[in-house]
Length: 127
Image (cartoon, rainbow, N blue to C red; front, side):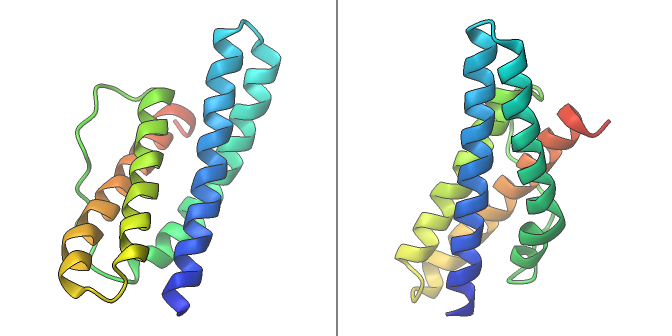
C-alpha cells in the first residue's frame, strides 16, 4: 500500500507539471508571453520538487540504470511527451500491481521516462 501512495503522489505532481507546461506552450503559441512564463515557472517548481523528492523515492523501489528514451532535442514538447510516458507507466503499474512479470517490464520503462524528463528539464531550465 505504501507504494500506491507514492504512485499517487507521482501521478498528481507529474500531471500538474505536465498541465503547466502544456498551458505555457499554448500561451506562447497564442503570443501571450507573460502567461507562458507564469505557467512555465509553475511547471519548473513542480519539476524541481519531483526531482528532489518523488523521483528519488521511486528510484528506491528498484534499479534505475540511468538510461533515457530517444528524443529529438530538448524542448518543451519533448518534456510534455516524457512526462506523459511517466503517467502511462504508472497507470500500467497500478493496474498490474500484483503481477511481478508486468512490473519487471514496466519499471525499467518508468525509470527511462523519469530519466528522460529530468535530462530534458535540466537542459531547458537548469543550465
